[in-house]
Amino acid sequence: GMEKINFSGGEPFLQDRGEFVGKLVQFCKQELKLPSVSIVSNGSLIRERWFKKYGEYLDILAISCDSFDENVNVLIGRGQGKKNHVENLHKLRQWCRDYAVAFKINSVINRFNVEEDMNEQIKALNPVRWKVFQCLIIDGENSGEDALREAGNFVISDEDFEQFLHRHKDISCLVPESNQKMRDSYLILDEYMRFLNCRNGRKEPSKSILDVGVEAAIKFSGFDEMMFLKRGGKYVWSKADMKLDW
Image (cartoon, rainbow, N blue to C red; front, side, top):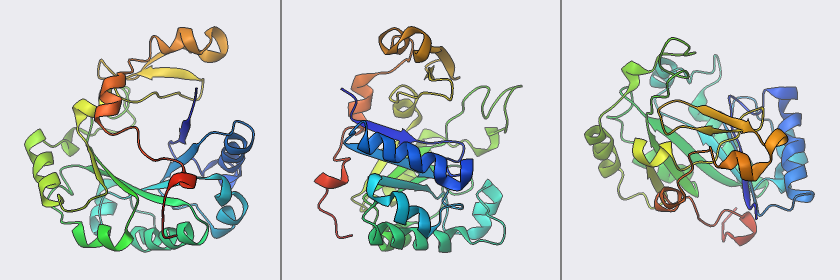
C-alpha cells in the first residue's frame, strides 16, 4: 500500500556525491514502482549530471530556502561559503524544468526571517508547493543537553507565524505547517529503519522494522492520520499526474 517516499537528512547528497541517493531513487521508482519519490535538500551539492542520470526517476525535488537575503541565510546557518544560496536556487529551478522534475521550496519561519516579504521571489520561482514550517523545538535535536544545535532563540509565537502567512496569503502554492500540524503527521524512519515518534517533543524510536516488521513498529510511530490529511499531506504527488509547464 506504500505510495510515497521522501529522502531527507541531514543532506541526502553528501553520500558518494549524490550517487547513493540517486540509486535509492531509481530503485524506488523502477523496482518498487512507487507513484511518488521525492528528496529534500539544501541544493549545495546537486550537479546537472545528477539530473541527467537520475532525474527521470524523481518526482519532486524540495529545496530548503529560509530567506532570500543572503546575510540572513548566513545568520540562520544556511550559508554555503562562496556559493550564493539564492542564485543556486534559481539554477536548480531551471534544471528541474529541463529534466521534468517538480520543484518545491521548504522554508522554516523563525525569528530571523519572520518579517521578510517573500512574495516576489516565490512567484518568480513558481514552485508546485511552498511548504512553510513554523520553527519547531525537538528535544535532543535542537534543544536540551544532547542537542547538536540550540534553537531556542529561533522560536516564534503562533501569532508571528500567522502574520507571516497572512502576508503571503495570495500565493496559491503555499502550504502552512504549524507546530501542532507538524509534530504528529509524519511517518519518519531513521537510518536504523525505526519509526520516530515526536508526540512528546522529542524523537523517540520504535523497534526497527527489520527486526519486528512494519505492522508492529508502526504502532509506536505516533502517526496521526487525521492530522496528516488536515495539513494537506495527500496531494497530487506523482509527476505523471501533474499538468506542469516544465
